[in-house]
Structures are given as structure tokens and as C-alpha cells.
Image (cartoon, rainbow, N blue to C red; front, side, top):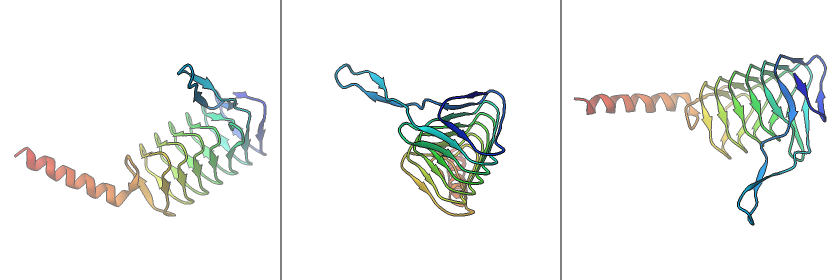
Length: 176
């Protein structure tokens, strides 16, 4: 485990092997003169609340200018990435191989399945459930306490399953 400066750990935090906490986020700006990307300084902090568990090989970026926050009671499975300035609420569970981009917000009591991709500036409102391999594009809001969302782009599971059924019928008809 690697713990970078300006990382604050709450009480009873469990960190498993290979995790990196408080490293620089993926912050680059384009240099208009030369056309290349230049690193934007990552000078913020990482704040981890009480009773958080961080699985093996997770990466949690520090804030660019402000803070990346992991709320109390949150549990991260193995190989989860949390980008700079992200804010994860209390009692959130995030399954393996999930990526949360910078400046995303996940509200309290959310459940995030494995291999979910959450783009930048996304808001997941409290209590929402994201099924495995869901994708949420930039600047979207997912709302619906206790509702399950699935697919890419993520939408309510009933809607997604209806769309799959229609697609399946169309495919079978075209094969005749």
C-alpha cells in the first residue's frame, strides 16, 4: 500500500495490499501554443471517512485543487479507481473493476456493480443501484432511490430489458 501526503484516514479504515491512496489525478490541459498536453498541478487532498474498507489494488486520486472524499462506511472491492475531486457518500458499496472519473458524485447508500464506468461530472443520487457493466456518460444524473439501472448508457432496468426484447424480436424476424 502506498499512502501519499495530504491523505487523511478516518478511524478503523482497512486498506488491502497494492492500493495507492492520494496519487495525482489524470489532470492535463492542452497547451494551445505547442498543441501538447501539460500536467495540471494536483494539489488537493484525499479524505477517507471512518469504517471504510478499500480492496486490493485500488487507486484513489487526490483532489486537483480541492478534495476527493470517501464517506464513512463505504466499501470498495478490489481494483476500483476513484478519480480526482470525486465525492463518494456514506455506506456506498462499489464492486470490482469500476472506474469513477473526476468530479463525479455518488450519493449515500448507493450500490455500484462490477465493471461500471462513471464518466466525469456525473451525479448518482442517494440509493440508486447500478448493475454490472453499466456506463454513465458525462454530466448525467441518475436518480431513483432503490431503482436498478443497467446498460450503456444506463437506464432503468425495466426499460433496458424491454429494449433488449424488441431487439431480439427484430433480429429473429430478419433471419427468416
